[in-house]
Amino acid sequence: MIKLSHWILVASLALSAPLARADDAAGASAVPAPAAASEATPAATPAASPAGAPTEPMLVGADKVSSGDTAWMLTSSALVLMMCVPGLALFYGGMVRKKNVLATLMQSFACTCLVTILWWVIGYSWAFTPGNGFVGGSARAWFSGIAFIHGDTAAKLTVSHLAPTIPETVYAMFQMTFAIITPALIAGAFADRMKFSAMLLFLGVWSLAVYAPIAHMVWEPTGWLNAAGVLDYAGGTVVHINAGIAGLASCLVLGKRIGYGRESMQPHNLTLTLIGASLLWVGWFGFNAGSATAADGRAGMAMLATQMATAAAALGWMFAEWFSKGKPSVLGIASGAVAGLVAVTPASGFVAPTAAVIIGLAAGVVCYFAATSLKHAFGYDDSLDAFGVHGIGGILGALLTGVLFSSEISGVDKTVPAQLWIQTKGVLTTVVYGFVVSYAILVVLDKTIGLRVTEEQEREGLDISLHGESIE
Amino acid sequence: MKLITAIIKPFKLDDVRKAISEVGVQGVTVTEVRGFGRQRGHTEIYRGAEYMVEFVPKTKIEIAVEDSLVDQVVEAIQKSARTGKVGDGKIFVVGLTQVVRIRTGERDASAI
Image (cartoon, rainbow over all chains, first blue to last red; front, side, top):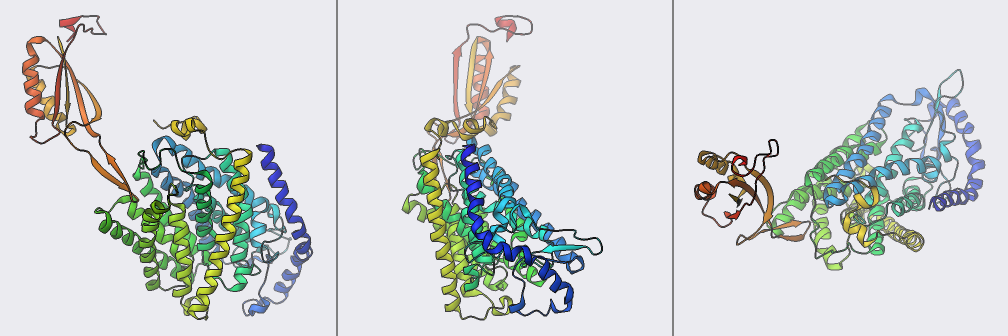
């Protein structure tokens, strides 16, 4: 098993070699060249036209870095990390049966650690260096080339072309927290029945084979979806549709939990779930407002839009449940809030508050039905509704972004039908690529080391079976 | 000697404890249990999945008493635990063959 993961890491590095050759020449020489350009013509930088905009990380004078932006982005990174640990960990942990709570917490925590390392090795480079339309190069493998002090006379830093007013260390860290939480979300689909070793391998390979390329395609200027004009402010496509569809693939390959539909599988502690949902809500301001990569009006509007959508969605789900089942539940309002957070993610920096309320309300109601009726109609066991909330919520949000974007805020002046079509392309690409590759990784793992725990282990509980611990 | 076991509604525990103290009972053991008799359970709904929860939380109290006190204790429990609604519970009286106080080794009557 250890050998297999080493092989996978080496293989992924080897695969990036051809890409590296293509852009290494550009990457190696580009570091001094843009620096010379930016040093020689500092006045030209703010007035630079889109045609002259930087396309890759570059060295700039430390005075070009904004302390306000940097302070906010340092904070945002911490907030998004908190979303995963303990936010998501508790949100999911409270929803599973008591015998599986530690294993569920462990999934989020271990994923955080694993993806941190993978991001350093090659993930960041594949996502956020130019490369080709599909994936980046290896110029930033092992974070090589990220300079925070350079030279004796003047302090210089590298900055990402996508966030030129903050140090690249901060940008890489911020994006790392996104890369961390995305695979952790998938765990909601396979809760209660996946082997820990198989999960580590699956999420590790997935983060490199699916997350990094999709992040590249949507957020890098050279990525083909970005070039096509897909609007995804903070990761509706990259994070939520991606995780949701991988979740769907997971529950289809793994199959249902033993006793699903017959035995009682109530959440064992909704107090934990609500605490988790609250941490997610607060942390999400780092996720959405932090995607402004600046402490400015755009961030402010993104934060406001996020809040409006979340509250509207929580109420939407709550009322939908109240009318259809007779009681408003805590799990319902918490789930509704998360659905709103998911749906407003792609839209947050592009919409006005009114649009955010509409997006939230739609997400609350639609995701309520997706997590209840849709799931039971199709019969798949998406334990914690990774697909129902993140997948469906993400798709809804991505499409509504194409309908409700404000030209004034987003700077996009396409017509709604045109933008909606572009959004659809983004959604379809992510859904198809994500599903196919996730399914393939899962099937390979299932045939080699096996994905699912044994029946006795599932009955006894993953805490004892996989981790030798229990909370009783 | 007899062992009196009573299954009562949890919120009645304090009332019952006071009532049996007044009758002269010195000690009692309390356990949280679940069960049902004629009382129906309830339905819980989590994200659209309905769960019929048949077992209702109850409190079980166990008291060891001298034969002479049995009737008074049973009556005290029944009066203090009663609400008049379905689910009030039951009292069981079984014979005790031996009682030992662990600290001193006293047996039977002096151990109760």
